Length: 520
Image (cartoon, rainbow, N blue to C red; front, top):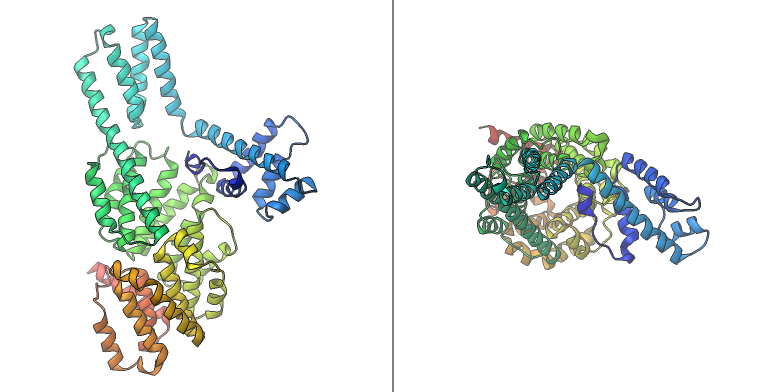
């Protein structure tokens, strides 16, 4: 069960924070079931664990206020002990739910293996092999390679007792399964290595060639896509490829691969059982198609994602709602329905969620949308919520995100005519990010900023032929089909000033031209 991946060993000082995060990931139905779980577990009437949980559900009070609400006094030790007990209860509840819902087949196969070994010890060979045959069929249907390994190991060990068993055939099955098992392990290691590199780059703000990294790691572990991969492994492979595209802003190259892999997953035996990874896959498809400016196709995948998110009574809805609504809104924005896009994201203002990265993306997207609308006061109001330092944001979401945030702020301050702020932000940006942008071969950001600065100092020049020619000669144009949609959005601001048109209409015109390039 995916919640298990979120639960790690946490030092006691951090339990309150992690309790809030864990409670936020539980669906409303899970929260109700957990309260019932606590009610059955409680043997005393004065137990305060349910009270604490309900206060965490509301998420309106800080730690000291919660303590005072529960005990009418600052009983720090008692409150600390209560938090620890509630934390352990949540772990027990989630683990039990996981066993009940997602591991039924695994547990059944394990029972078969254990029962067969007992019969083998008592020399009931025929019964034991019949049970192992059932276990083998189940494990094969569900690509459970580790359990198949145990089944073949047991069958080979006792092959001498069953004359109908062909040992060579059994050994060949064992070897083939080992190959699949090893490939899954290799893919898992590759995925972990790539994610580790991302974390290091995000924290330090360094540059790394992700395409070469992904290529080298996949070659190092001899990873090749096959239909025998588990659903989770195919998702991991799609995620690895998407990471490479994220680093290079080139989603066109990966689209065919993702579509082919998705077609494999559509016929996968475990599609209905792997709800969590199915949602992840649909999101990757919707996001990639959005980045490639195929908005209607993206919306089709988002409709599928919404449908899957509603299954099991919306078990994973809360966990994925931010990502889902963000891409939904962005699609509508670039389809021309700016008001609808804003209305989709506005409800998430001032909300709290464990998915901090998506929450920050929503805030920044709303700033962009209000900016495109020409509502600079609302854009400034939302932007004011970014009160942390750039260093803090770099650690949380990476340097590229911070660069976008700072670029938007510079444009916003120009529109608000805050002369002193514009000058200080321009100076600060060049000082802090020029070296990094040159390292990742994105000098065009600095060129763009110099043109913005030129407009800021002499706005009357921007409509001249000389300035237009200067812009045309300043960039190496990659074409609308390949150009990143967010880069186009920044350029649209400059183009709108050059042509004396509204920003939003200029943006849509650029996108439409890029889409026509797709079709031609």
